[in-house]
Image (cartoon, rainbow, N blue to C red):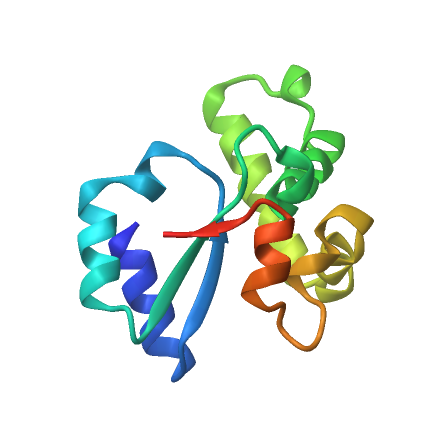
Length: 128
């Protein structure tokens, strides 16, 4: 996680706000220490627990499940290959990816101007 955040911070050239679910890795001591040392580059915002409808990743997961059928895979390698193929295809389809963020429950992630902390609090999203 810290390696990903480090790459993200280096690539953008400005402070990045990352909205994450409450997976234990996102709240680990290692990540919290890294965030404290890099507060000028990255800020993590935690979504409320048990709120998958607020997570754009869940829309990608649903799309993946719709297009990649585990029952058709003949092995775990086959399933992994089909999943990678689907994800690479989506990388070349930015309109579909943008559509994930246009869904009513996740629109908060892309509204302009960037949401203020009061609005994030109202949504139940807190910062680490």
